Length: 405
Image 1 (tube, rainbow, N blue to C red):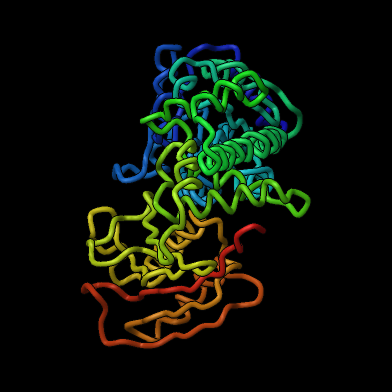
Image 2: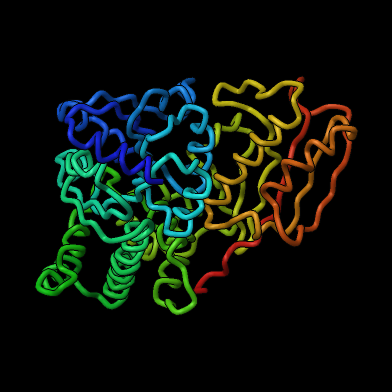
């Protein structure tokens, strides 16, 4: 680690940096655009372009990740490992929590530095460079780059920034849900909506209330990300945040995940949602229209058979059981994360193999993801699957967090 700190200190004396920016979502694309005008050479990566993470980080002095959730960060950085050269610093700017940051430190080689630096702010501040960067770890080699995005708060050792981000969101997101319930109460009791906003504007909730006067048409902070942030921050001593999390999970399952978080007001005031709600995650290749990747029914999630397809519908790793199993479990991890679940929440797993002699290869991969006490399970051999070249398909039943807990 001493060599990594010396490398970072040497590089911070120079303005131009070679930076790989992994993640081109709403926030990431705006943040990456600010780096070249600041004098840096930037290689941007996003899913589905055909460029591997390892190729994107090859030759970079600084690697920035801005991705959707802990599973996505682990997946992308694992794929980037072959391209990370000694002395490079990874700056993790997603909202993933301190536990996930510690897992990344264990994943990365000792000669690769790591800083956690999630941000406060939405798409407007991202474009303007006025975000608040919550940094944990040794930022001596990246402080100047981070300042391109906004004001930098150095909060302490590695993981401090991630913990601060979740602490702040544990207040802001439940407040948004509280306002949604307040508006629903007002409607039920004949309170004029604009008058209610006027009164609330004179209170500490005024800024959030004003956002509901004319709900935004663009997504600045998605409802799905708000739910994910509260899921990461969940702990037994926070019943208010737990109730807000359940509200957001229901709204996400009702199809509002990609809407701005203010859409929670629409959901809370809109009555009962359908009993069976389709779940199709944006980071999972689209279906053929004849099925949904999963359906949430109450506190259970039924996951359709997942096979090794890429974004173009082509078979991944044809003839290679290990490659196909890895792909399937990565896809499953994204579906689980979208619903606030983990592999430990799987109640039942069923696997279809075209060749039972390959079950040992499959089992090695499965044990990487499903650890501890295994769920109920069935494995069967079938003569063929949906497309030639597929070796396995996996479907699941998952127990989700009950509403209100």
